[in-house]
Amino acid sequence: MFKSAASVERLANRLARLPGIGRKSATRLAFHILKLSREEALELADTIREVKDKVGLCSICCNISETDPCQICSDPSRQTDVICVVEETADAAAMDQIEGFKGRFHILGGRLSPLDGIGPDDLKIKELLARINDDLNEVVIATNPNVEGEATAIYLAQLLKPLGVKVTRIARGLPVGSDLEYADSITLSRAMEGRQEL
Image (tube, rainbow, N blue to C red; front, side, top):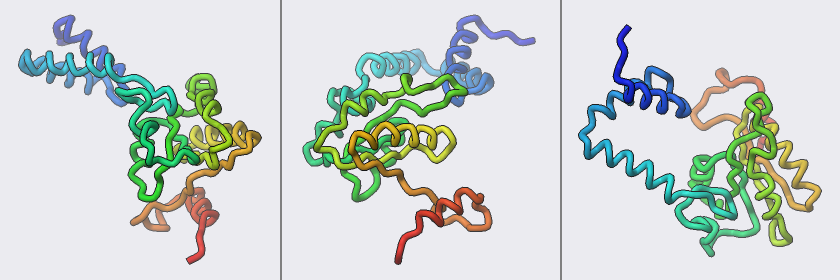
């Protein structure tokens, strides 16, 4: 069996630890990095080091940022009375593209998943609860519409409602351009529940 150099194996092993990267992809990436010029490879290494040195979490919303507070939390034009709770930074970026939403965000850093050993203490829930005050009118829970996301949404709602804040959940239903015949019964049921008057 072919065996590559030990340092290439170590690199492939490190890359295989990344989410979504299997052993074959990690090996291909390792060989690609090996083919890069020394300058390009060192630039990649420096970029990784720079990200680790400069990027941290916003002390308010737990978003990744090079500043504290982050740009959204320090933006005076953003509404302070609405917080949209999402699982990850990428989710906040997607939600921020919505016209009309100019509130703030809170990034949980994941979702409840007991099978994976992720409980409430592993998420930024305490930080969210610390943000609840009299000026806050609404918390929009925008976790993903899967089993773990739903469990997280229910858990958060149970914590937030007794604090006197309005808790809402983003609507779920059919994506634009889809066909009814291909939708599952749960999606159709949620679409029916979330129907609006025309």
